[in-house]
Image 1 (tube, rainbow, N blue to C red):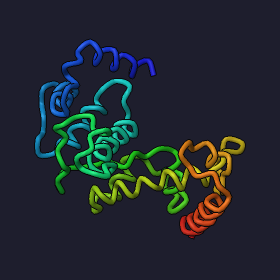
Image 2: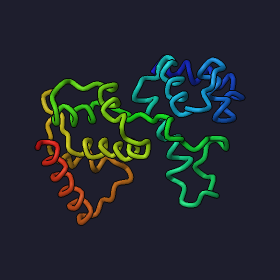
Image 3: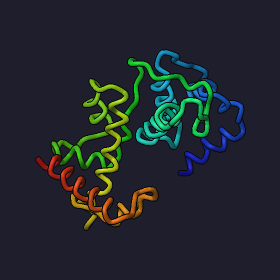
Length: 191
């Protein structure tokens, strides 16, 4: 966290560098901007900063895309937009799945080969960027179906984790519905 704090302190000193998507891209990429692949460029630029890792960089990029394109009920609404110049993503550009330990457990359950961030993202190369956004739901299903016992992750419904999700519905009917879907999810990944 100390390294990430340095990054944010530097950004604060040079606030003009975050006034637009492209000025931020230039800032984190030492003046170089790949306008053909701006989302990949954003990922690579963030990942090159001290304190930013693969997962955090991928998560930031996915959220920038979502805030500007997927979460807008009406394209005219600007409440969630951070920058006015965020481009739409083209087919050649690249979003990465923000792989963490929750997603690695899912992949290792499917095929125990000690999956890494890069291995998992390589396995998604043939999928579209829209598919990558959908595959990020693996985190939710993995999060609510994993418990840590004796430093090992056990695959089962985790009521406590579900309740910790701030925006999850807390009524009995919804919880039972999600719990049943979580059981189906576990059956799928266990084979």
